Length: 216
Image (cartoon, rainbow, N blue to C red; front, side, top):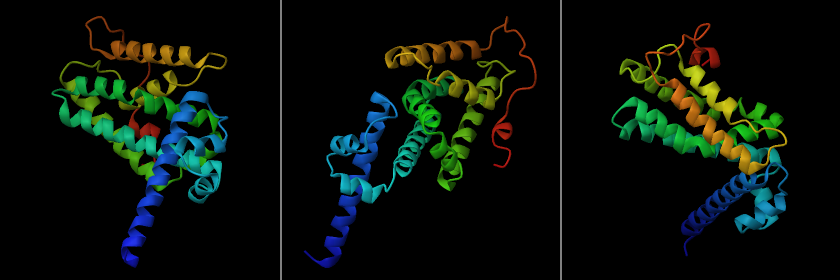
């Protein structure tokens, strides 16, 4: 084995270890909440704790990596829905249905690990992904309204905030019921966003993506 080949193998192994750790942490946070021991993450990933700490020196670094991985997944789901669906309303509903698991975990992480989440908001990659996602959703909202499928008095920020609010964990509610309730609430949200002749006008001006991210 040449030195260059050996270096490539080491880099590939390191990348695989990192991906396995992120996936294990993602699964365990979703299954068991915020108190999962780091050692359990290492066991699920099939690596030693030393390997885990070399990749992620503290819990905050691991949480940030899990969150960014989830954001990448959400953006991919949104892009695919926009590219593949024949109309904007179907793309929006596909996005909400297929991204809900990732969005739920992101919302839970923001509640469980508030300090890590606050620091993540300053991460350039997080900002980039957020901008991409909001622009995709904004295009879909505008098109769905132009098609007459979505009520005209809502804005993209309304949609983003509704999803975040509906996915927040309810204190004292067991995990299975929290998930079931969130799934039902998201479908109720979609139903309420459909354009109908008897839609009651909403109060105040809609919340835009500029309202959510005025510096973006």
